[in-house]
Image (tube, rainbow, N blue to C red):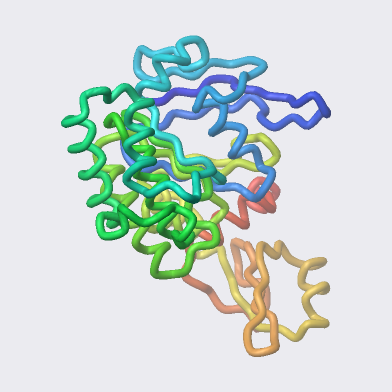
Length: 293
């Protein structure tokens, strides 16, 4: 269990990135949802010992994450949003180098680990290929391979599927799902579908504050019967916003589909819609449930 208590961080420019965050993350896949600039990366970097918190505590079992940084790094696998590689080095050679840095000094043991990770991430056939020739999805899979060196107990992946094509995204998600069966995996993203498809628990963060946490299915069930949909012309959207709790809009065939939060049917033009995690996400960010309560 990863436990975060009263964690806060303010940058020198005055931006308060984290505001008294309390969160418990059990073993398995945990989704951290939030818009860009919400504080997700700050939280991930703090857990990964890459920056200091102003106040608060983080523990992983008996390990004090903020104090015992070397201890954390021995059991941590981290795939940041952006990571650099040596473009002229092969995947096998660089993964071998990372394994040395992780303390795998015996050549035979290291070779076995490196080869196993290349096979697991479906990179075995391109192991002699230079990393500069890899596609975005291949680079992400290489990133996961290096994060898995040393059998980590805690794995953090920050916006891992951003920019991937649908096939690579699905392959990457399947890989994460396999990994998340036995360790704590934190998936930080702004892509709702990634959390819906993978995570047994989740949290929503915005402007450094934790807004919601729980099981996706239970959270979705709480909104059942409260989301309504109507297709309107473009000039009608503003009137809907003024009169109703609009949580999201999207264009469809030249018109706008409006989703509204309401305990009762807003008017004759609205129809009930099956609630999904996107409705939970947008209604939480808009604060309509808090206002309604």
